[in-house]
Amino acid sequence: MSATEEAEALKMLFRNQNAFLIPKVKIMFTASDLGVFDPLMESKEPLTSVSIAERLGTSPFGMERLLDACVGYKFLQVERKDNQTLYGNTNIANLYLGKRSPKTQYYSLKLNAEFVYMRAQHLADSVREGEAQTYRLSDSSTKKFYEAMYRSESSLREFMEYMHEMWSLCGRDVLNAFDLSNFPLVCDLGGCSGALAKEYISLYPNSTVTILDLPEVVETGKKHFVSSEEHRITFHKGDFFKDPIPEADLYILARILHSFTDENCVQLLTRLNKACKPGGGVLVVEIVLNEDRTGPVEAHIYGLVMLLCTQGKERTLSEYNGLLSAAGFKEIQQKKTGLFDAILGRK
Image 1 (cartoon, helix red, strand yellow):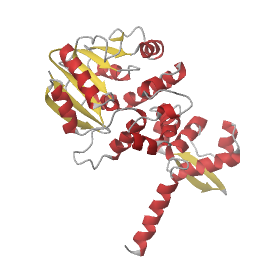
Image 2 (cartoon, one colour):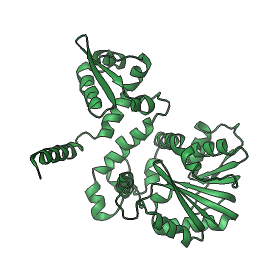
Image 3 (spheres, rainbow, N blue to C red):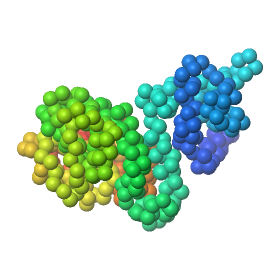
Image 4 (tube, one colour):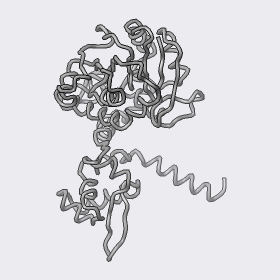
């Protein structure tokens, strides 16, 4: 190793060693939660740290430290003008990080910074035990992810906002992966806020979508996310492992299977195969691991999140093919759609 290579390796080591102290997501969320990016969007011009602090009611000294960290991570840009340091949003901040950004990911940041990050403190325990670490925290005694997320009305609402943000951003891409026009009657299992259902009926106006989810999710979905005037989207209360599955041409499992064991996945997929109309199918949306397990890094990260929070894992395409085949689905196809992969199996 040359001196230059060793110097670069040392820098990387330092960054990785110290990244846990205040992780990037914590900085990103703190800035978003305090509202840093919104006045910069509204002002249309760079602002000083003092001006931003005054608008947000924070300490100018503390705000300058936070803004500088955001510059380091390229959430903000900085310039010197007339002996002043001026801060402005980058494109990613304008698009995603403000609470009023057109494609805001505020609740995604909040979930990762507050829920997942706290569990990550017990990663070594999770590796030793092979179990979720939810029960180790004082706010929950359960090992079940969804029980922990739904423990209060506010936490349930925040989780649904997170899912709504994700599918409002990525839903159209995954639904465009295949021509689904032959599936007018759809059931979205764990469809949560209805964001994916809205994308589906927008793409296929003659379709109807039933969202099958737990009673508390359904009530919140009706109250806050889907208008009663939208007759093409209906809700059905139930546990998809225990209760009757509504008949449909297509079942959607978007980021569902990665939360469960192989045995649970085959159990659920078999139930869907039995309920599915002849010629129907199932659409699975996940981040698929490369067959040699070298990536993508997003799948590796979510694999650790699943270890910390659920009984599930991320899988390769051959592993998903095995689950679908065991449940009776055939003609399995896969397409990449940016972050997520779409897998379509036919009955």
